[in-house]
Amino acid sequence: MARKPGNISILQFDRRTLSRLRAAVGAKRIEVLSFDQARLPEEVGSDALGGVLKDFAEAHDLARDAIYTVLPRHQVTTRILELPSQDPDEIASMVRLSAEEYVPFSVDELIIDQAIIEVLPSGLSRVVVALVQRDVVQAHADVLAEAGITPEQVFLSTACLAAAADVYIDSGESPFALADLSSAGLEVLVMRHGKLVYTRGVVSEQDWSLTGPDGTGMREELAIELRGSLAAYRRESEDGLGVDRVFLCSEYADLRPLLEELSSDLARECVLAGGADLFQGKSGALPLTLLGAALLARDENRLRVELLPEELRKGRELAGARRSAFRLAALAAALLVACGIWYGQAVYQRTLYIRELERHVAVIEPSAKGIAEKREELQILARQVGREGNVLEILAALAEVAPEKDLNINNFVYSRGRSVEFFGRARSVDDVYKYLADIRGIAEGPLALLAQAKSMYENQGTERGEKIYNYRVLIPIEEKERGGDGDG
Image 1: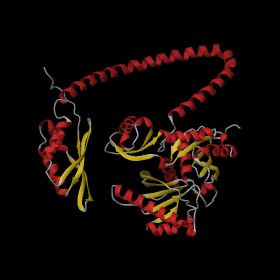
Image 2: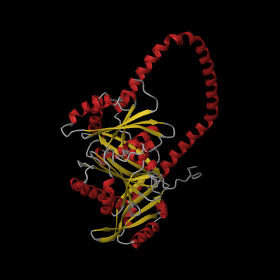
Image 3: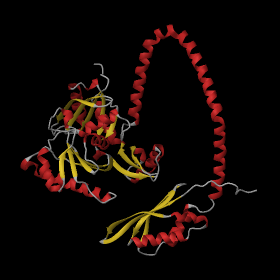
């Protein structure tokens, strides 16, 4: 059957549940065409999942649509980091270089992707990073291959939930939590001002649809995990405040019976997430993760984390190239008739294009030469200023004037040509300010930039039962042009 343009299917599956959302994706809205689901018996193992998925795909004619799949958060190591760059390529290099700090695997064993959540006025970027072992994604792809499915893309569930929350949940300016209860685990994320600020995934074998006495253990585990997630976010948040509202969704369970008791256990308002109106008013399951994946498939400008293996992507491109080649072969006879006309037109167009390029070259060439000369001057200047005042001297000076007690430095970051910043703890804010004054007091000669040292924050905390202050000091490096001070 021919594929109808704009229709897509989103798949999410594990050993317990197969879910498929079929949607028509338009330029301005998404229309849910159907939502299909199969709950699997316990005896179905991982080795038989491909066959079950194949039967499911044939029963629902998945071949009609472009297929996207979702990898759950609990199978992926995810971090939200602040990185000293706003260039996507540079950020990707930073993430790849530091990947082995977060997972016990070599970088060659990982599939890595990242997306910029927001750029900060300080020149930093908040970035969500996903690191998953290749074997995990390959096992996901093998099940799909056994079912005869080649996905367009594999999305991370966290990015899907963030996209759906941005569209279907309105909580004003207050931060809110969204908990997705899937058949294989629990995912919690926190959104603030429409931006992802926290994420956590938990593996769980609980059946979230249980009610009454049979669901007592499930409700207790859910309350414990949600409390732990919300407490972890509160500790990590900049203002130390938590969330007042928790939205819940699930692709298979009706969560309404949980809301009242869960609100009491968490001492926070717990409500169902939005988006149910897309399912024609049905009040049961709400597959917000699948809705979010449809948003990502439609809009590439959203926060996207893609985990499709490179070899699978290249395979799709090769298959597409073969299909294009067959179409071209079918049109070859017709093209021969018009070849003479097209050839003359092509020669004429290319002649005009060459002349246009030559005009552009004539305009750009002087600027290019000027840039090359300035680059050479900058290299000379870098060699002149690089002999003294380097980062090691700065670090030595900071250590020399540091007090012997009541303050320490536990992290030092040097961004070449941009800034020096360091973090630590102090017993009091006065200790931080005194240290800043001592730093500025040695700001002369090669260390003149220390005069610009400033405290970015002093956050109160507790360590071993004693009150402390976490601080951050920034020393900007201002690149200034120098002229007329060379030799001769």
